[in-house]
Image (cartoon, rainbow, N blue to C red; front, side, top):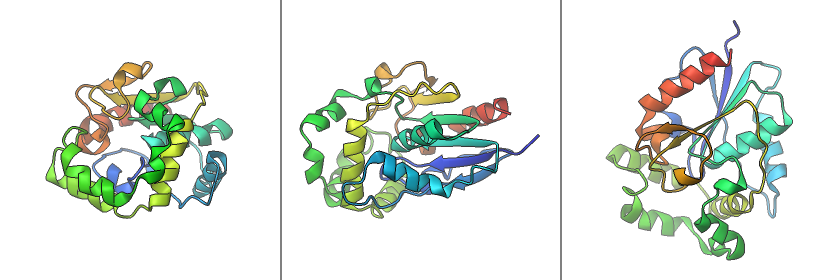
Length: 220
């Protein structure tokens, strides 16, 4: 049996460290990196650049994406032959986008968003969004500090305007019941993690790892 090649794509504002608590068994782990978006770059063009980090002839390939990274891996899987796609705390169609993000499509206030504002307000909303440990809060600050305002604004624009529904047959969706970014009420047929937040890939890594290992094993 071939050992699967796992490619993990972090969410908006995160990097590979958001996956640092996961314990994945019997697989080769690879991390996909966010790239700086070019001026007025389309999502399709951006995805083409990201997927260059993947060697597709090293099969089997399983793509795992967290949050906005879940959208990216779906875009990649729609054009390439992969064994399985697993999204965590993400969305798989425009119907799962919450109203506050749809609002951004009409009123693009994200154009005024900046990293300094997010970091300054973080202590106010951190616990509500699942950043309950000092370690988790420190990590979020470190990861976001590496992002540019251009990347943050571009990403929010692409999320709010995403209208695809690929219906990938090999897709698995893991979602927390206490996700304040993408409400579980809008998510169609996920594997639920009770009380899991948008940050559960880090804060509830033991439970998420158990689900991931089962899905990886079942795909082979």
